[in-house]
Length: 351
Image (tube, rainbow, N blue to C red):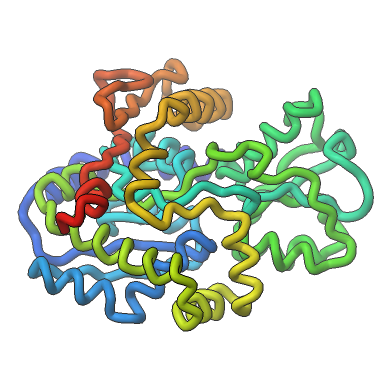
């Protein structure tokens, strides 16, 4: 809690400067990403030269930077060090949007359909967590998944011995220690942990399909002032999506190796990921009436945890805008936008 609160305060102080600097025409941009099955294309885009090809088409430069710590990548974006970052819907709402940085979901890439999981060491079920401590990245989607899982069996976080904030970079090592009883994390960490004969998966994101959504988000003012930035990112992304959908094994193997697994392991992770390989599928999902309901649920969770913006008076504190122009939350404080404009351009062959 302390880490996120401190970050939010810093962001509120920096947001005005960052926003002012962003709202001007530029030719150089930086986006950050971290290791996750649905985000491995970003590393491939950089290494393969596909990003450079699309950036050159629009006369700009886009640098794609891998950050080893997921939450830190979002913090750096929020502080204005990057123009975009790979993030989930929940973490976008709680950190940049909740901190006052107007942010647009440029690409809705997938939703987790089993990639995030609650894992117990030894025999048991979700009710076995009663009285236990659980290791996770506190206040991330893992925390949300835990809350949803506990609720499904009539438990709550108050029934636990507590949650222990653990970096994703340390999760595998933590599970191997005698002190850790249960963890909540995401792939490829889930796959690695489940290799242990002691690991017992209790609940995963397929049980709440469509709620943990993986995005590429960008600064709204930067995008408005530099639409070619959006066009280049989206064009490059869907070129790689086409290669993946066609089963290009060279492409998939490169992503597998970069994520620390082999081709079979990466394909297994993709099997538990609802990838939107075509822009039309992404547009359809983003335009569906289920999305606002999901975001209301996420906002309620964040408010309950006290992390929906500094001093948020209610779960409606942050306004979230959708492609049809509707808004959930405060219409006077919209800082999170689901915009299908550029994905629709890709679907129409207009990039």
